[in-house]
Structure formats: structure tokens, C-alpha cells
Image (cartoon, rainbow, N blue to C red; front, side, top):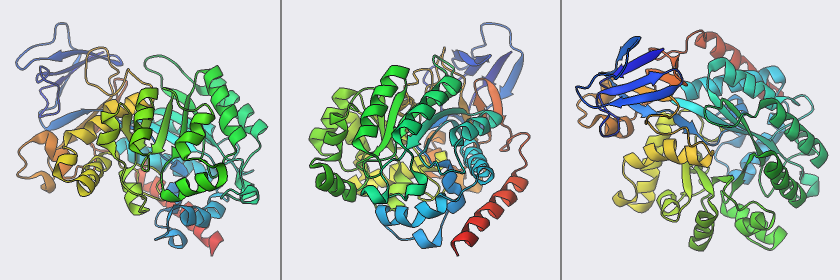
Length: 447
């Protein structure tokens, strides 16, 4: 099927004002204003009300945390204390509760214009051995691309780490399950819908042996590497006290500084460390809302880019954001950069680039993140019909500065996954009710 998305209101690359021709899962043509498609068209979609963006790409998340939003015992705490308050709660999540949490996170992302979702799941209590499989099934049911990070923790509080023993695993179990998941789910090449990355959680919950062995396994399986790094000054102090070196030096020693690695947060790096990462081809998932809520600091996104680091955008977990809305995260990214660095620190187009091209670079997906012939037809269309947009001049800037929060149409691989602001076939009211009940059960256990 050939679809013409005709004459969008804004967002198109120069020379594409006449719209986009989608042929199957691929963008086939960009049309100049007043030009017609070069071949036959099966369907025309009038996009004159819509600003069109490449599908937004979320580079870091924790789906399960939708069950513990605004969780009272963890409010107003710094990262380490926040984690200590939440680990015991997360360790009680059942498979059914986890499935609901994933469905809610994925639906939120999709409705906000996200077409590719990366999740970092590192909690594997005895009741939740197949978490990544569940996430893959839920992403496939909604039609999103998924890059799921098989996280891990083997350093419990008894070993000098933060998590309780009940949510950690042995290295042998972690490596065996990582290989199983790669064989079952990982697709390579353009258009891949499901991919696996390997992702030990953080220096304060993972042993050096696990970090080293995971890097070797990823290289052998052709997978990417991901972890939290340089999120807080507490982390820097932990690494200096425990390992005698800063976080970046520590992971470099363990084989992590290469162009298949992206880190979450990346706030507390020195200028020299940023330059080293740029030379190595590292990516950073910038998580502005989470960083603000936890008071972690400001990721120097533009400085990282200038030094060659790929900067992507992410909503992070729904217990530290506390949401999964990608288009809102673009506005947050702009405001945070300007709050820390002044009006010249970032322009409205910068977070659009981070959430598309930059995120695609982080995930190693050259087939995503741009509107151009030959790219995957992943698109997010936003209508400027709400009161918040009234009086707006530049349609593309309006998405960011006026605070767009919901897509009207979302396409993944040439298929419409959001139509008129809704996900076809998904009973959102029923999902919300079931999810609320699951969250209430968790709170009751804590009480």
C-alpha cells in the first residue's frame, strides 16, 4: 500500500513541504510543495492540521515503576535513599502486576508520539523470572519497536551494594538468561521490531566480574551495552571509595568504553571525560524530568554533543519522572538546559534532534530518527487544535514551547498505531482501573 501524507502544517525537512509517500514500512518519497507523487497512490491522508515529527525514540525507562508513582515513602529523597525505600516494594511485584505496568508505560509512550521504546529492567525476584519476555509481548501487542535491556544486579546490601538479596541473581544465571533472550528476541538489520541489549544496573549494585563478563558476552552476541552512570555525586563518591576511581575510569577498565555503549543520565562527567566518551562513540540517554525530581543535577547535553557524544532523550522510570510522556520530555529538556545555562544553552530544535536522530544513534539504529527516503516509516503527527496552541506562530516551535502532550496519529513501520488520539483495540479505561488496583495492592503490602 502506498500512502500519501499530504501537505503537513509543519515539521517536514526542507523540500518536503508537499508531504511524505509511505510505501509499506518505508518512506518512499518526500514531495516539494505543489508536487505530486511519482507513482500511483492507494490512500491520501490530509495532514494540513498536523505537525509531523520522526517517531520519538525513548532511550531509557523502567516500565515496572508505573506501579509506584508518587509513592509516599520515597518522596523528597535523593537517589540512594529513594532506591532503598523502593527496592523491597518492587521485589513483591507479580507477573500479572508487571504486565499491567508494562502495558501502561507502553501505552503512555505511544500516545505521546513514541515509536521505539527502550526499557532497562534489572529486578528479577523469584516471582518474576520472565520479565523481558513479558515486555516483548506487550510491546508487540501495541505495535511499538522495543529495545529491551536485560538488566542485572548481583551486588546486594550484604555485599556492600544497595539492593536486597531477594532481587539479585548470580552471574551464571544472568549470563544464561541473557543468551536465551538474545536467541529468542533479538532481530538485526533495518526494520527490526525487537532487540535485546545487556545492561548491568549500576556500579553500586553490580560486581566488577559481572560488568566485565557482560561486556564480553555483548561483544560475542553482537548486542549493545547499557547502564546507569554518573547520575549523582553520591555515585562518584561511592566509586572513589570502593574502587579508587571515578565511574568512567571504572567501566573503561572493564571493557565498556566503545561505540556499542550508551549510558543513562551522564550528568557528572568532567570535560576530559566527555572528550574520551566522544572519541569512543559513547551515547548518553538524557533524562531531564527524572534528574529534576531527584535533584541529581543537569546533564550538559550540548557540551556532550560538541565533544562527539550521541545525546538521546528518555523519560526514565515512572517512579522518578513520574510519567512516560515523550513529547513532554522535549519541553522539559529545553527548559532544564536554559535554566542551567541561559537562553543560549539550547534552542527549541535541539530536544527534537535528541529525541529522534540522537536517540537513534544511542540505540545503533541508522534506519530510524529521520524523515527521509529509505528510512522506516515511523512518524508522530500532532494537531494544534487545543487551547494551549491558540495564537502560535511557528507550528514546530509550538509543539515544544506551548507544551504538546498527546499525538493525534502515530505510525510505526507504515502502520497506524494511534488514530484520533487513541490506540485502536485498547480499552484504556479498563487498563487504568486494573493498573490502579494493582498499585493499591502494592501500597497495602507496604502498609
